Amino acid sequence: MSGVTGDNPYRASGVIAAAAAGGLSWQDVVTGSTLTAEAGNAYWINTTSNTCTITLPASASNGDEMIFADYDRTWGTYGIIIDSNGLNYQGYDDSYDVEYGTAGTALNIVYSDATNGWIPTLDKAVAETPSKGNDNGIFGYGESVPAGNMNISNLVSNTGVVGTDVSGVGTARGQYPGGCEYGGDKGIFGFGDAPGGNTAITNLVSNTGVVATDTAGVGTARSVVAACSYGGDKGIFAYGDSSVTNISNKVSNTGVVATDTSGVGTARGWLAATEYGSDLGIFGYGGPVLSITNLVSNTGVVGTDVTGVGTGRSNLGACKYGGDKGIWLYGAGPGGSTATSNLISNTGVVGTDNAIAGTVRSVVAATQYGQDKGIVGFGQGPSPSQLGMTNLVSNTGVVAADVSAVGSVRKYCAACSYN
Image (cartoon, rainbow, N blue to C red; front, side, top):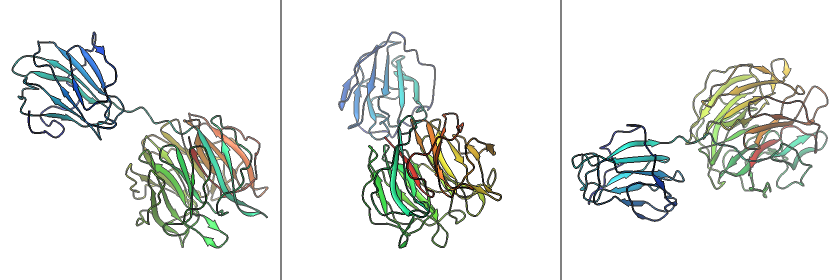
């Protein structure tokens, strides 16, 4: 056979007929670059490292059947090539190679006759289940009176238990440095207000919760920023107070912060951000008392303003819960600090205000833990000025009562998850 067709344009997409997989024998996972397939078998094809060329039988009878399935959802990078080995494939002779290059594809083919040959009865990208989050979380940095800016951290276990203070690493800072995940299992803290003023330094968080020393800042130095992950393994810092801006800085899946991207949406600070869906993000609310939101695509593009839902407020927290949804928590509204939440659907739609448990407060931080739950902590209430209690968020978005403070009380800290 010679020539290559791109993603097999000669077949219809989607389900043609329900797969009849009864009686097929599933084989061991195939990792090689070639496979000689036999009728009556089903194959997991792992293309993590290479494309796999599958040679079909040289002869076949009506009703002969085979299944090929994307084992590790990698066909989008390395796909499979079907060599029909002298027989027709959906009415086309074997002068065509047939390629499948969509992640998550399940392909069921059945032989008909000499005219149409092998026909796909199932050719569909199977949806990925909602992504779970990381097991552990971390609160870091912040400020208190009279101690000023801090660089301590507190780890959060996979059951939501907050640990005692871990000695500080990096430049002490407050006024909301941002925090988000990257690389699928690590985190990053960045920006904030340092003793010399606004900064752009960052600190990576390992997949065991160890905070690294300062990385020289990239992008505009600023404070009161927000950050979230996107694309499954990348992050983004955006907005903030440097005469109030709407610029953003992407974080690669290796933790490298990019230069400024021109701003989109209303310039503001004192906002929050979180992930939702499987690979999307959202920024929302902000100072002084705004309720607008901006969606982040799975390529890190920040969208224009979406008219707000719920009470406008600033200095709030946000985190992911339930595997694919998000929640805004607490914050300062027109009448002062609140105990309010707004749920975010897995399509990025923000819900109306909910009264929630816990101490009324603002300048909090929040992160996910236990894969599908969240935690919000620290902040400032009517009295005293700094708080240290936390509140767990269930996998259905229900906020629990206060848990007594562990570690140094403070406000304006950041949080992210790791694994």
